[in-house]
Image 1: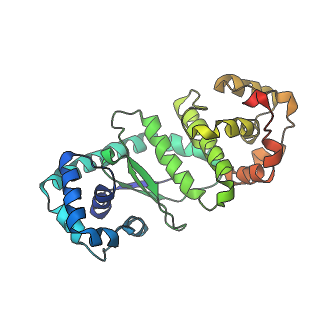
Image 2: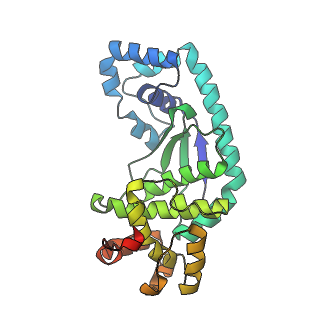
Image 3: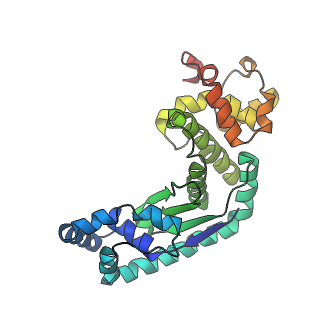
Length: 278
């Protein structure tokens, strides 16, 4: 898997205009621009996806706000800080990319395209992805300069895999989200960090669903009845393994196949009255 980290002026300024204010000076500037250039704000509100699609050749239909922001005294400082942040992310990626690729191959079992990460200022606290299926790109800028590299890599990979799974029908979004969290926030982070990250982070409303899927997730990872016990001890998630028949085909499929299995068998998997799993 290959990731390229890029700082693009249009993407950076767009997020400064539409994202949270990162300083008092940018807040005042945005207020002034909104009051005086409201029509221009509306015209560029969808530019982020256009920039993601082709950042090298992007030309805005209206560059008024971009130019006004670019010419401010504060932008040069913001750009320098963002360039420094990009190098920080690149260093983390270069140091860990072999391990990341190996773990992802085991968990996903399908190949990933090369991705572009358009880096913005970390104080914008944003991670977003291209919605067009053919565009393999993210926007990333999180307040994690002092955060451990495991967290940063997990966030990046989470954004990438979420984009890869966006084609699923909204009717199944809870199952897809639960499997995504098990795969990346839990198992990927666990293998990368070498201690369990299960049931840490993610959407708290999915905790019950993730526990219900967990036994089948272990089967996907290749666990038999004996090794299930080791996983349960590692992750501190208990269930009665004798109540589950081993679905041997799960260890032969990929993550999309596992999601399809969970969707097809959701009435069988999700036992609403199973108090042991609550």
